[in-house]
Length: 343
Image 1 (cartoon, one colour):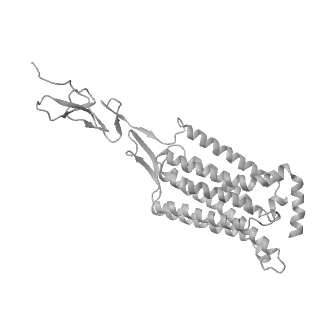
Image 2: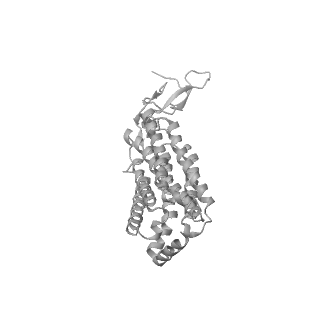
Image 3: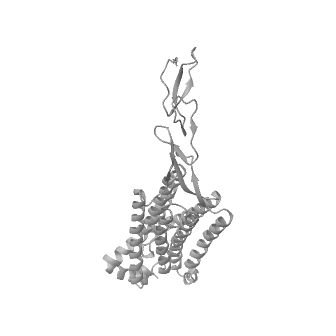
């Protein structure tokens, strides 16, 4: 039968749209809207794809959405982060082994060697907890990643705070008739590490009890992708954890800054100041970047902050001591005589 028309037929992937002309046989062809397909010619309506599917390039059929997360198989960021984590963990192990081997030397004994061992162990665990953030997240890794990171970092920052405190106490104890000498004999630093870390553990336990993190599928943030991510559960718990860690870091930084000009024989106040400056700078810069990203890039920002802040503490506090122990052992002996003279 003869058919009157004033334009070509609409191919699959498009639909008819009235152009409000005089003749009913005239119409426009418009592409299907986002998330819709059309698989017939001159379709009047497009069909919306199901939630887990997305149109192909021509919008003629629905195909499965791709899953996005930090995958071990095809994501170069995972290779970079896992390699960096292992390298820094090995360096930390070497420093810890070196300190254990030279545990009776003045450089290691200064500022409480037990706290130094705890700090190195916490830094080591902080590097290794990066692996909780890699791969496809599930409920158990979602719960472990933030809690472990918060506890390990709190132990590390508490140890730094204890080191800073003992510098102040040691300086005051050298003055004649000072009552601070009694405090030096008490295991103040060990108690401080235990108490400050326990607060973070309590925050974590309450968080897990009230509203723990869990695996979540985000189908709306990126077209054609399903983000497999961790929902933090209680956002308040997450920010309490970060806030408490930031509070410890700020107190440690301020205290170290105040005593940074003490004589070098009273240990590492200036190195603690540098380490806490790096730590605070990294996490202050991380927060806006973390809040402005989604999916695997948000996780990558947090991993980067964990690695850089842990490396900052390791390098600033322990590498100067390793330099003396390994390359300048005569300074270690000379330092022993200085410590005896002053204390």
